[in-house]
Length: 312
Image (cartoon, rainbow, N blue to C red; front, side, top):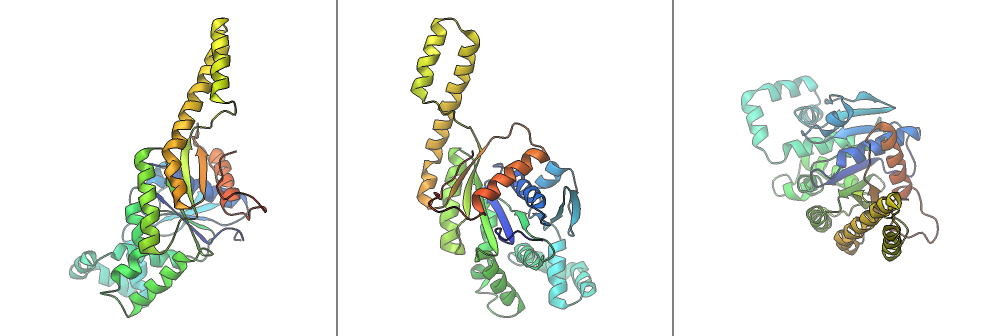
C-alpha cells in the first residue's frame, strides 16, 4: 500500500551532522504506521542508519522492525545491479566486475557509483514510499546533475537513456520529494542556501521543504513580560519560580537567536518546517516526529493555510 498524498520517493539531504538519518527513519516509521510498506535506503557508506537502528544494511531489503524494510546503495551492490540490467544477466555482470582490468576501468569512470545508485533507486517498485538518506548536499546534488554532467561523454546509448528516465523521475514532484535538512547554525544555514541555489540552477529542482532540525521551542510569553515577572520573583525570594523563569528566559533568548540565524532561508521561497530537539531518540518519538512532518508537508493544506509551518 502506498500513501496517496506522499511522493513515491522521499530524498533527504543536508550538511553532515544535521540529523538526516533521524528524519529519514522518522518518516519511514510514520509511513508504516499509516499502513504503507516503506523502504529506508542508505545511499552513503557512513552507516548512520546502522548506528541508529542497530541493523546491518546490504544491497537487498531486510526487515528493520515496525513494518519497515531497509537496504544500502553503497558499495558494489548497486554497480552490480546496473551491470546486470545492462547485460541482461547477473552472472555475466559478476564475471565482468570480478575481472581486475574491468573493475579498475569501471572505478576510473566518472560517477559510476552515482549512476548505479540512481538506477537502482528508480527500479525499486515493491515498496512505497522509498525514503532515502542521501549523502551531504554537495555529493547529493550529483544525483540531479548526472544527466547533464555526463551528456558530453554519454549522449546516446543505454546509459544516456537510463539517465534521462531517472532524471525525469527525480525532478517530477509527484514521483520524488526532496527534503533539505539544516540546523539553526550559521554554517549549516549557509550550506542550505547554497544547495537551494545550485539544485535549481544545475539540477532543475527545488526542495519540497527545508527542515530546520533541533530547534528550541520558545515559550508563548513575551520576553519583556518574562523579565518583569523574573525581577519580581527575585525581589521576593521565590527560588523555584526564579529558576523556572530563568529557564524560560534562556529558551526565549536561544529561540530568538535561532530564528535570526535562519532568517535568510525565507529568501529561498521554499516552505520551512521547524522541528524540536528530541530529548530521547527512540522509535516511538521518531514515529511521532515523522507523523508531524507528513501532516505538514505531504497532506493537502486547508484553504488559506500559510506555506511556512512550524512545530506545534
